[in-house]
Image 1 (cartoon, rainbow, N blue to C red):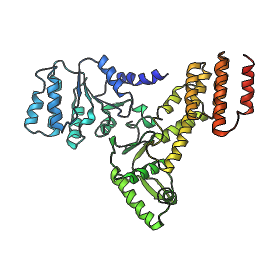
Image 2: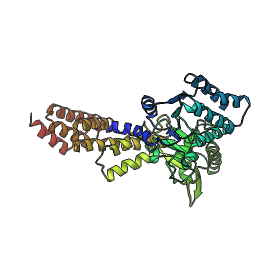
Image 3: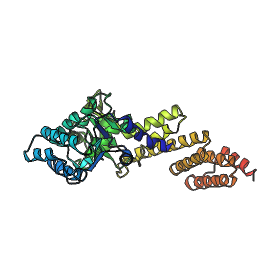
Image 4: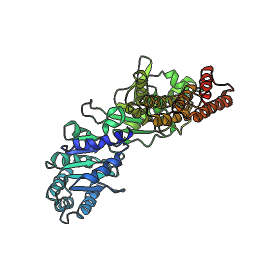
Length: 421
């Protein structure tokens, strides 16, 4: 099942063969595997990794032409001439496309890897917008990078020129889906050390920890009162001073995002609606809850939730509200592990079931029901010694941590197992 999840994006590459533009979703974990699969199977391809330190559009084109001449020594005559003439980005694009059309062998695909090394200036955006629109039939531009801004690509996809490969495996089943309403995008990844992207561009500076921490609080609490905010961040300040600090901090958040994150209405701070917010925590919690309410028959539904839990919630920040939230989400993660373990057991896949049960117990070692599931599974497999050791492990944990013994139901199960020996 895990392998199936990894191979689906590769199949989609074939479905995108008629698109002039393919942007590999920057938050897709298997980006490098997609590129590797492409290089193994594609023919008539120009592969170019944008160099770190690429200064501008002119530098990009100069280095691209130099690299392409390894394949075609005559490549780039028109591009070079346009660069010398200091042509506009649009004229440079026309010259570049003309050179691609005359290249021998004529490329089917032009892959620009590590594209995030090229700064997304207006000239760069205008250049690539023109390139995609004027590419000859049968030619395709493929963009790959860890951080790829969504302009001009989103507009081109909305107009039918391209697709985003693997975007359906990112938050909310896709961010660049042209069928969704057009709006600025805010991606927030808090099941990690914390990372934020505004329209695909990483937000790296916060002007101190306070704007950053208040930002995450707003995202994690989409409906919150001013009193709740003040009690969390400035419990010892007089209301007037707390109000001043709050508004200054809130303004810094807006300056960093370029949009208002929240709006005050009906006594609550709520999402402003200026941005489409994609939040890994919200997605994770919803998927686990949906799977618990409607248990899936396919483990893929549980894997989809598990892959979102990259690490504990904002694991390097120790504010009290974050610590509490971290514990809540850790327990939710344990529920997901237990859910997929029980599904694998129902599917008679004992090895995977045992593996996920053991992973769950690393998170919630005191869960008797999970220990009982393992004891029962070991017993059914005829591994009575393992079942006995599992009970002894549980008994030791409960004695050390809570100074209690296992429940009567667990003791009764243990007695029945011992009678088999």
